[in-house]
Image 1 (cartoon, rainbow, N blue to C red):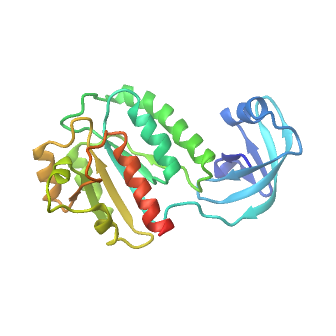
Image 2: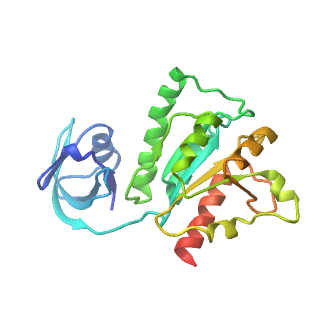
Image 3: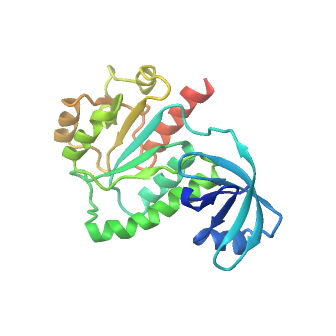
Amino acid sequence: MQRYFVPKKAWDDDRIMITGADVHHISRVMRFSVGEKIICNDENGIAAQCEIVEIDKDFVVVTILNWLEENNELPIKVTIVHGIPKSDKFELVLQKGTELGAYKYIPFQSERSVVVWDKKKWEKKLQRFSKIVKEASEQSHRSYVPTISNPMSITELIEESSEYNLKIFAYEEEAKVNNYHTFGSILKQLNPNQKLLVCIGPEGGFSNEEANLLKSNDFHSIRLGPRILRTETAPLYALSAISYHFEEL
């Protein structure tokens, strides 16, 4: 059943008014008609099975049939910090990372980031990024839409990290030594409902200075397997491993 995230302000007792781009999706893409059923979610994770009662060019009205008790979120809250990559790689991470359960994203302006997002460029990109995570959340039947932070410097990232139970960063040098920290051993330190910060570098990885600064602020360096992963592959590997460890084992 198709799912749509609708702001709580649009919910009125047992009726919900859907506006914006979702109207086009319902009427033109999915070609739904009056009487068909969809699922509506608000930003707090509340979900309801609904029936379409009116379709207009500017809005769709649905009535709530029954409330759904579901939780499709990872048992821990995972924030992905990603060194700003080139091209559309960050869009891939947002889409697939959302499907895999990421709770929040923080773009990181690393020393080795080739791309720089100024305020004007970021505001334009954020509109596109927000659309990607919303649609991926609907497709994968998430209970929440992940948030996307403004880009951070390493100083801002370290300040932000104080609210997390565990902080790790994927460091390619860890994949080259015999005495390394495995990702599995790190995950064993976490309990359900705790918060994990996972930091991934850009194409060139973290600089030695960045790695040392992170380590001095209680970040654990880890390896993600014995192979060197691309910057867009690493966060997806991490999220898949987290899902397997907490949801399948």
